[in-house]
Length: 627
Image (cartoon, rainbow, N blue to C red; front, side, top):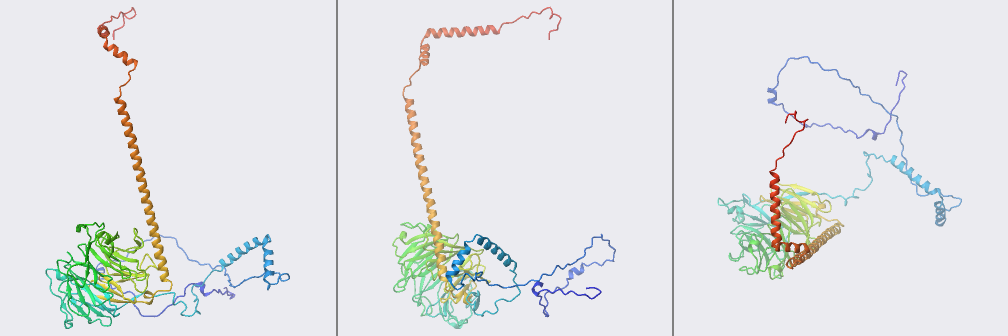
């Protein structure tokens, strides 16, 4: 610009100015800070004063525009070319192949190709700018990537409260197979054991149940009223419904007894074992086992005993074993650990698993007749009690083991190194469950109310979803179809979470990926196990070699000592000096002469010590003083 009216128009593309600023008009108060009365009282009024400031350097801002660079983009699709049309027929494959070999045999061909590659890389590097504010792939169909992304979320649908106030502690929840919408909620009323216990208030007195130790069957469609109730005159610690025949249910009491209920008939237990045959402490674990009539089950207690019962006759257990890490023929109850959990899989009818409060996991054999045959193996996995054990519904040889502050996944195929996956948490983990819809998904709950969902195919370091509750998560169980998760809280509430499609349905390759992952981890554990055995064998051989070397050295030293003692016992051969000395000692005349000679020498020495010397002075020393 100037006085003559010259103009210069600067043009630039929109994408060179950066992100576009979008402004909207709305009435919204972001922050409102009220004046403080305390600060107002501290305000001091002062008269205006004059202050001097040091003169500092002044800076001015200036801007410079560089030369405008005009850019242009072109596209080129180079397939093949450069043929000599006079000599080569491009439609003939043999002719083009002969000409191509002729060009490749030329010495300058490699240099030209190298230079062409460098030119192409420089051009592609100079034109790699991408407009990040442009909308790409707008012409693609909407359902193109529907199977790639999946939504990770869980939404609460139902809340089931305890019928008693104050509410009891919710221990377990169990879905029924005959009706997919019905489930059993089991409560434990331990407050009744306290001396100052007062009976709770029943919020549903018209239901026909006035027992504070009762537990109920609920329907998913009605969260206000249970379907059925079962009573007990004492505190029930654990209860289980038979999976094969849901008309049978057994439970363990605080006194160590076990009872038997018929789910068809509401009310109290049909039979109860006597006190002389029950456990010595509270019954804490129960599991049904495979039998023809579905009448047999195991029970475990904190006294360390595991008893095998038959519901047709509860007067005496069929078999009993103690949870000892090193079982002997005659077991000692002082060495037994308290049982906290029992697990049995119907597809493996011979094996069963029981866990203890000392962090041990035992593998039992149902066909064993003595303790050594019944307890197959024992693994110490945790420092505290084991809370939960559950098999993967798709890979039954892999377990989810929950205890203290850790979660482990264990495989039966590995003997001495049972943990294939290992997760450590900040809070104590109380519950865990495998998903029945996805083989890679499992969830855990801790004593601070954190519910975490883990996917082994997505991450091994952090959960994919975390939900926070006010109370501890005591039990978790998935619905058999995998669409819902039941969350049992310590305050007596049972929450139903409906999972999104991405968390309840598996992809095509998920099962094969999980199988390969488990196989890889099992192979790694087997390699570590083999390496451990190799180290032990090397150590054992080294110990044996050192022991043999020590024994051979001791034998040599014993031989040397024996030879030296034998030499000392043999008569010594005397030399000429010894013989001459013995002849002198035996000659009395020579000894007397030697004695006289020694006395004469002593007298001469005494006389020499008594002599005095007189010093005479010369003429030159007469006049010098004596010092």
